[in-house]
Length: 77
Image (cartoon, rainbow, N blue to C red; front, side, top):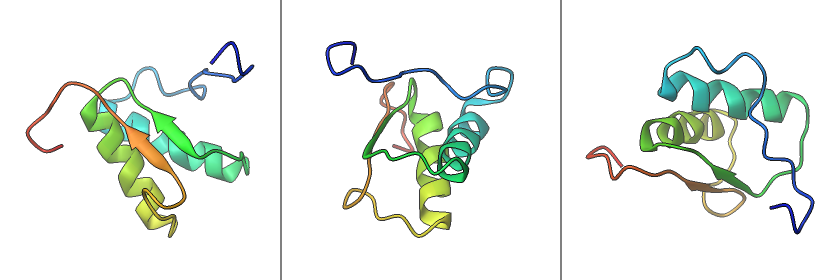
């Protein structure tokens, strides 16, 4: 990400929330700021599920418009 000069900071105010809510809120914040993104890397699968929910609520096609990656190999994933 450094090579491509991409900012990898999480949106402010998400650190104290649960992982699902953090992913959901982070995507909504990025969309509200009209950021241009094609991929989301989330530290855990539950955060990725929250991100997927927010993208679906906004009518954004996954994986057509945005790719989502999470880690942990949770059963729900």
